[in-house]
Image 1 (cartoon, rainbow, N blue to C red):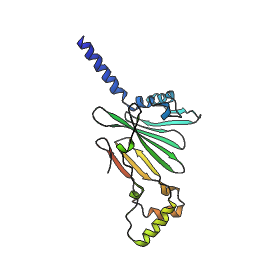
Image 2: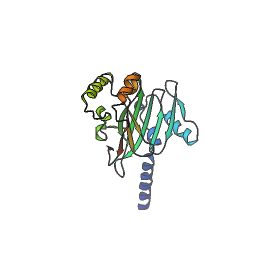
Image 3: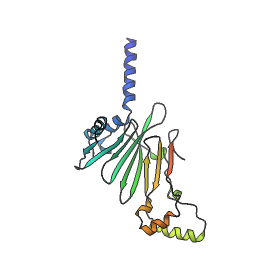
Image 4: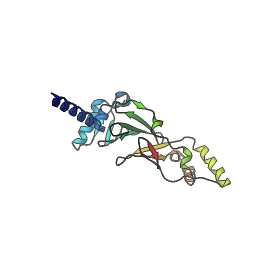
Length: 213
């Protein structure tokens, strides 16, 4: 009898562990967090990819959504022409994982929102796991007074702080790109580029939190 109980407990633990993969979690995602895609849609993505087929479905608006990539701990989904989602399963410790979700919208250029959920899709406080880079972090340290005046005038035109976030399929890193200059007119964009650090800001998941590199 004890052996049966132990075997049952082992099987339950294996099922539980298996369920913590991205495909299972994504299918179980509440419709409230996936308003354009049904549970059937979400299951179809995984089935199509497993069959080496193009993973396209018709969403609730009758438009095409496509799952570009899905692994055990990562997915990238093109929901429409103007919005996409990335998800990454991240370890908090040896037994607990959380889900990082990056939602990116084009309007007029890419801008992202980063959220965190437990494996039951309960939203978690984002500031517990990430401190976003500030807009000033993307600018060089300018000390020349003439350049300071010029930069201040340029930044009056850059009146929206737009930030594109990207998760990595290969490792537990997160990258932020400053996209505000992309919506400026060409002369202003070229001028403001001179004052930027010229590279994305990267973070790595370390001890249950994204740490800036």
